[in-house]
Length: 91
Image 1 (cartoon, rainbow, N blue to C red):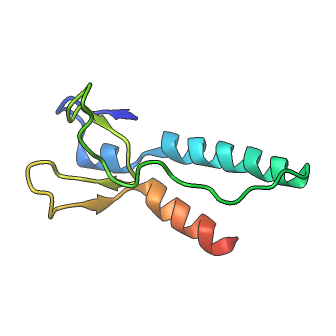
Image 2 (cartoon, helix red, strand yellow; image 1 turned 60 degrees about the vertical axis):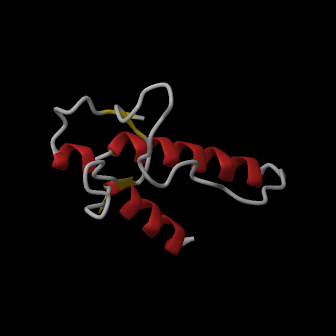
């Protein structure tokens, strides 16, 4: 999750490189497991959009899409979504 207590700029919120590293690491390990003979049916990115978390309200952002909580129609794709889309296409 990315912490957003209201002082995170939009460019910083969209540049979620840590999320890319996290998915890349998991997918690399998944590929090694497949190469070792494990049967894998799929991979699911747990949260595709920022959402309300009961324990932390709107202070943590989990998704690959940035959600403007005051105007949800003003959503933006994060860098991780662009990376994930290209990763899936190349596979």
